[in-house]
Structures are given as structure tokens and as C-alpha cells.
Amino acid sequence: MNITIGVILLVIGLILKSLFNHNLEYWELIKYCSLFLFLLGLSTLLFPLWEKWNRKPIKNFKQKPINRILYYLKNIFSLGLILLMMIGLEKSGKYLNYNLRNYFINSDSKITTGIIIDFVRIDLSKAGKEDFYLIQFNNGQKLINKGLLIEYSDWDNNNQSKNFKITGNGIVVNKIKGRKINIVYSEKFPSFIKIIE
Image 1: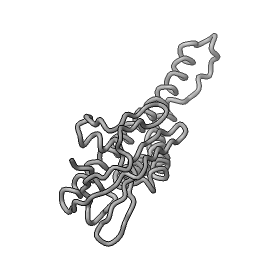
Image 2 (image 1 turned 90 degrees about the horizontal axis):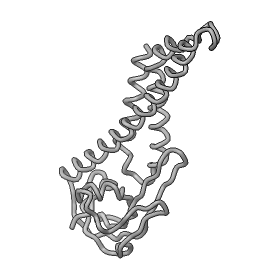
Image 3 (image 1 turned 180 degrees about the vertical axis):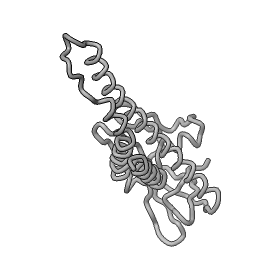
Image 4 (image 1 turned 45 degrees about the vertical axis):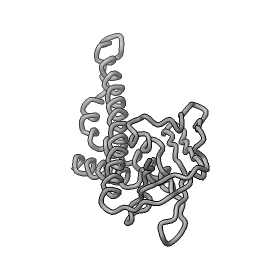
């Protein structure tokens, strides 16, 4: 039962991350939800193992020091394992979202001109940060503003972008804010956008 519940929670977290990670409006909510679901899912999966490991030695440290040390090492190892698996799931969800964006852009897209009107950094304490271009464009019916992950734009250019540099203090931009750019966007899901040269 624990395995089923744990896997379901992990899959839900991964689906949320895969579908909405690119979206500026939902990024913070999705980050917290996916982290919570990953933590809960992994904890549920590892609970039987952790319960087996976590039997506290009856003897005190002086009588059986190795048992006591192993007890603490197992707990530290299980917490480290959960942390590493959460980081892996977060990165996998982000990569799946990037590929989903490329799929929709390649299957049903339009090209238009947009303007980078701002840069947005979402900084969550102890949960990470993300930088976005805020791009305004006309989809044929109305003027809309959508965020584009700067990292995705960098991946599109094989990490060769010279338009910006991310530092600890923020984004240093080389004459790109306010500039007109060509973008391609998905007709079905206009939040999937890509800058094209």
C-alpha cells in the first residue's frame, strides 16, 4: 500500500512540474506543490525501510557504540537519499517541461514579434529561484504577456547566450530589455514560447 501511495504522489508531483514549470503565473505554487508531493511520496515509499532501520538500540553508547553510531548514520543517509531524489525529480520535471514546450511549438506554432518588457526573478527561500523574460506579444486576437524561462532560452542556444549573465545579485542584461524580438508560440498553449533569431 505504501508503495502505491508513494508512487502516485511522485507521479502527480512530476506531472504538475512537467505541465506548469514554464508558466510564470504558477511557478511559485507549482514549485511548492511539487516539492511537497515529492517529499511526501518519497517519505511514504521509504517509510517501511526507515521504520526497520529506526529501531533505537537498547544499550547506551558506552555499552554498544557501533550500534548507536549506525543508528544515526542510517537516519542521516535516509534524509540525504530523500534530498538527492527530490533534486533529481525536480530536474526531471523541468527537463520534461522543456521537451513538452518544444513538442507543442514544433506541432502547432505561429511566429510573431514580441517585446521583452521586463525581467522577473522569483526567489523562494530555501527552495530555489528562477529567472524569466516577461515577453509581450500579439497572438492575433489580443496582446498578452507571458514569461519565458531564461534558462530555457539558454538551452535553446546551446548555453551560448550573450544577452544576459546571471549573478548572485540578479540578472545583468546586455541591451535586450525593450528590444523587439521574433518569437514562436504554440497556438493551443500560448504560454509555450521560444525566442528565434
